[in-house]
Length: 74
Image 1 (cartoon, helix red, strand yellow):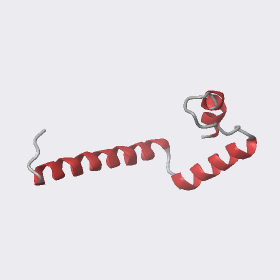
Image 2 (spheres, helix red, strand yellow):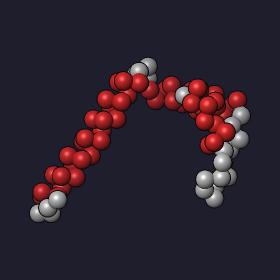
Image 3 (cartoon, rainbow, N blue to C red):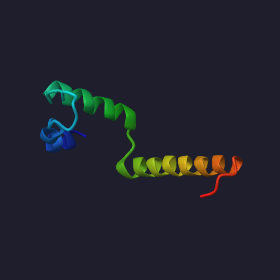
Image 4 (spheres, rainbow, N blue to C red):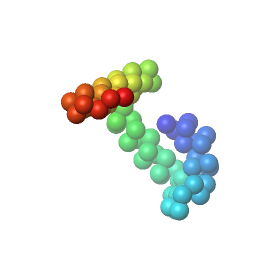
């Protein structure tokens, strides 16, 4: 996350929306990195990717089940 923020931080400050982007100070980067570290809980990229994919598959399955219950075709 730290590498991402340092590499892409300047582009994140571009005016992509009408919202004012925060200044990417060292303090803000530290807070983002610390929060991300807590959320990942020591899991690596591959494990997080599998988790993401499982979540996406679960959402797709839930949509298919809801369509079937309501008689909605593809």
